[in-house]
Length: 159
Image (tube, rainbow, N blue to C red):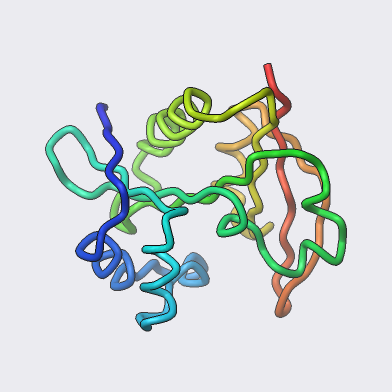
């Protein structure tokens, strides 16, 4: 499967805000608000399109990929490139996650400066995502809770 990246634009962001995942992944549904729209358009998010020119997903990096409660637990002290991602709901669980995630990692590896590790923060109930990240060499590090949800950072050391 082929992908390409576009800077997040208003049309992409408005589409993403309407995405609705089934339980328990509905945790990832975004609030359709001006604040959420502003975040998606703040420059830290990119849209990922499939080769047939359809919005497939998105990713973010930096502070946008961090969960605020993790700071108090020291989850973000190490020098890592924080990454967050989302796939269009009907595409999840269809076996396309590996190629999507591989594309994002390869793209970020090309643009990142230095030899920083990659870090993801994932809700621990999301076993499907954790299994995918583990296949790519990510290891669990620091766990913490926010609003009754347990999260864990997963880190992949630099090559």
